[in-house]
Image (tube, rainbow, N blue to C red; front, side, top):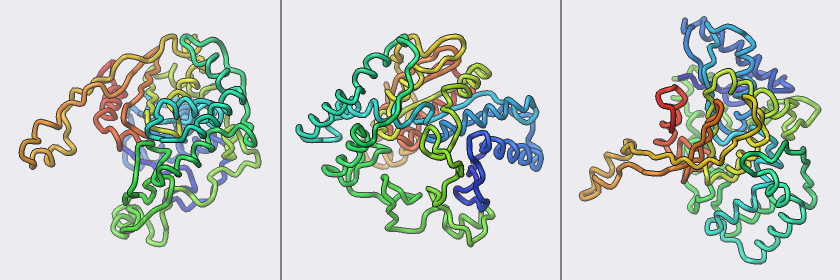
Length: 373
């Protein structure tokens, strides 16, 4: 397993960003990866790409660049796994459009007053979100979704919710809406959407960690880069100065069709990338001859594996040894035409951190060890 801190401009990297699109990022990656394989003589392996969040854009474009190489010795792409991934139009489809139904679904966690809920409902209906959602969030799809653009001055319901969520719960996190106070120490320095480091240094800025990774002592690691990794004058579809089209338009279907082993998973407590928004993006994607999923995801994900992470803790407490057993139903799954979708229960944006056993099942499927989750 290889963890890559990329693109240029993030983490430990000390180069100057020059990319204007995902194609530039992908070219940098495949050039590095081929040199890495040659340096350590690790050619002729199956390659699986994984990532989270904005990697919903990185992974498909890097995968496409690998396919373009037509070189299975170095780039035998065999599948991809993406968590809470930005694969479609994030601002409108994956975040704003499903935001109010998401709040309704998890009303007890947001705890908004009736007046604010009424304001949200009015915005949801008056701005056309309800009409669009009702028409296109169907199985099978009702048709190709027309492009939409955000009216931030009057219809920014997503950020209305975001700002208000901190009122009843100052420790609220869009990454995991169930999080409450106190703010806990985080190894990366971001326990919520707030930078908070009351204890020791961020893990990757520790002297011993830098030494182990052969990183120059003078380089400071940042979870979020200070400068943009894209330098285009055009803001692009995601307003990140990344000019590339959304992956659902071309590259993601290509990866699915080339491997028939792509898994997209969403945590049901994630507000940053909302589950129904991801599903709506999938319903506007054509791959292997059809548009979207023909049936709604509903097959249970049953976790029959016992816990390993905290077994010693439970065993050490008299009478608790048998409590930490199989989890049972921890999500739903759906597979069509090479694409697997999974919704993970009781998980936020960082699924492997929240539900390790479910994520392990995802990896088993990705590697072809099982045909279902």
